[in-house]
Each structure stands twice: as structure tokens, then as C-alpha cells.
Amino acid sequence: MKNYILKFWRVFFTIMIGMKVTFRHLFIPAVTIQYPTVKPELPERERNRLYVNMDDCIGCLQCERACPVNCIEIEIVKSIPGEDLGITSNGKKKALWVTKFDIDIAKCCYCELCVFPCPTDCIYMTDVYEFSEFERDNFIYDFVTLTHEEKEEKIKNREEFMIKKEAEKTAVAKKKVEEEAKKKESETESENKTDDKPEKNKE
Ligand code: SF4
Ligand code: SF4
Image (cartoon, rainbow, N blue to C red; front, top):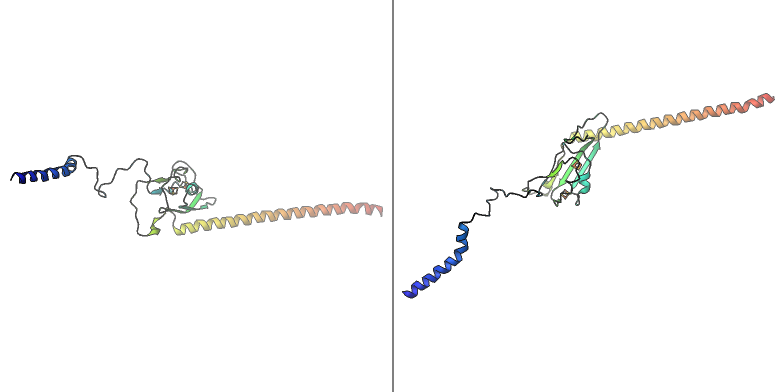
């Protein structure tokens, strides 16, 4: 009987040693959270998904040039005289239509280098870190606010404006050439008249 009690005590004691850590943690606040129901508190300067506020984008291309992995693609079209694109929230006048602004977030290395050069602070890191996708193409974020028709219209307007400007330039150049030719002609005529006079006098 004594032997049985001793064995029982040893087993009980071993279990107690094994469960020591478990028991201790029963009275310590939990460090785990019930993700995704509970979201972790992120550091202040964390880097996550990018966002572009197109209302403030002036199409300066500085973010595109700064990106080390070329995951930003921007296309712009110059506005034509008479078009008012408004101003940004920090008072910069907009003069370019942004017809393409894609960020391939799957390529992005979250370096934040595109954020710092932006003169209007319109490209920035958000606190969104859950954006998994099944399709690779869904990682290409299109920020442009213009519709397809509007893009076409802006491109067409600019092309027409350039053709008109070029035609005007050509017309001005042609007129100048004509005027110069006329001037030269009249100069030659007056020179000829002056040359003829002494001969008549001789006769
Ligand atoms: S965070 Fe870095 S890699 Fe990502 S878009 Fe900006 S510059 Fe490119
Ligand atoms: S740097 Fe800023 S304003 Fe310039 S194109 Fe990029 S997002 Fe737009």
C-alpha cells in the first residue's frame, strides 16, 4: 500500500511539474488575439496598401520615376486652352489629364519611395493589409477617375488642338516666306530700274 501511494504521489508530482507553465498562464493576460475577429494594433509608420487620391494628382510622374520596381504606370494628356481642371487641396493648379494610373501592388515592395516626392501628398500608405486575391490581374489597381469615353475625348481634343496649332504655325511660316519673296522681288525690281537709268541717259 505504501508503495502504491508513493507511486501515485510521484505521478501526481510529475504531472504538476508538467502543468506548471499551463497553470501559470491561466492567471496571465493573453497575448494572442482572436484574428480576424480582432485586428492587431499596427505600428504608427507601418507600410501597407497604397492609395492615390486622384482629385489631388497633378500627373507630375514623380512617383513613377521614384519607384525602384516600376510598378507604377502613368499616362497623361495635356489640357487644351479653355479647359479648367481645378486646383488641388494644397493650391496647385492642375494642367494635365491623368488617363492612366496603375499600380501593380503584387510587384510593390512597400519601400514608400513613391510617397515622399509627391508634391500634393496624394499617394500614401493606408492601414489596409488584407487584400489577397485569387487572380493575379486583380492586383493591378486602376486609380483613374475618368471614364473610357472621357479619356478618348481628352486624347482626341489634344490631338486636334496640336493639328490646328501645327496648321497655324505652317500658315504663319508660309506667309512669312511669301512676304520675304515679295520683298525680295520688289527689291530686285527697284535695283533693275536703277541699273536701266544710266543706259537711257547715255542714249
Ligand atoms: S512603395 Fe515602393 S515599390 Fe511600391 S509603388 Fe511605391 S515606390 Fe514602388
Ligand atoms: S507624385 Fe503625386 S501628383 Fe505626381 S503623379 Fe504621383 S501621385 Fe500624382
